[in-house]
Image 1 (cartoon, rainbow, N blue to C red):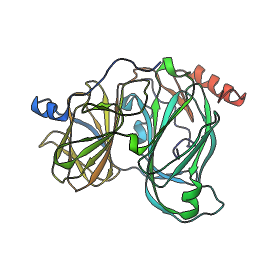
Image 2: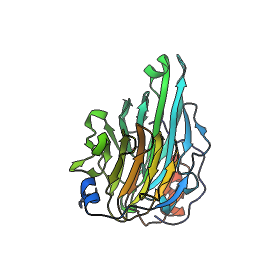
Image 3: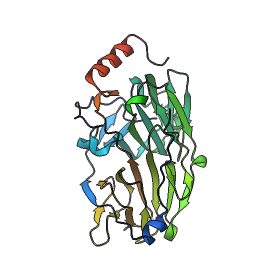
Length: 327
């Protein structure tokens, strides 16, 4: 909800990249370890980038930085993370981002602390709180706004959230806009060894399935590494990109003896083969895992629109300015 939508326009990225009805599922973590499956290598580590403001409500790290809107992170496009920040009471003032359009992709907003309020041009209005998720499919076009909720604004407090942009396959870019409210209580959790756990926002793991309805194979896991030194093995489908982001604490990622250390707000881009191995080097470390099947399609992006060609981008802006979004 409150996120990176109204952001500076990204530079044009290079070419790269009906619901998905074929099954995709990962083997269990125990199965991965028992089979001696290879561990995904660390391709690249990115330290925490400088923060910037999105509107006046979201002080964010642009997590993917220079890799945003590139094939290296496909099907994900962008990731903004607002680390915990104290906001004082603001009676009568709305902090956030006013109305702005989107076409051709999905926005996923995760509230960790505080509340985010969403409203859009097709009539959806909602507030999410800690642990909740808003999954908005812009599709053929939507206009929305996102703010701190009135209740949070009046009381003040600690605010923490993430917003992700997820690409739509070319065949689904002009799908009907849709909004999915996903409450914390509806997100299944899979227990791992040593007290570690995975919340499944999207994708399948350990015989459970996340509630998000998807257009392509994607995994979005909120991982709690509660026990210091206890390895978590997360099996992912072969060929899927995988991005590891540390929200809190410190994490070792990669094959034993060849691990890389990730501190708060650092990110690792992983190889596409093998299982994911994570070890919390601090108790109660927290990780957000973004994974998915690359679209392998051209990406044409400008500001709030993400299509496949420059011609489609021009049409998107023409349609917006002629009032055709949100219908």
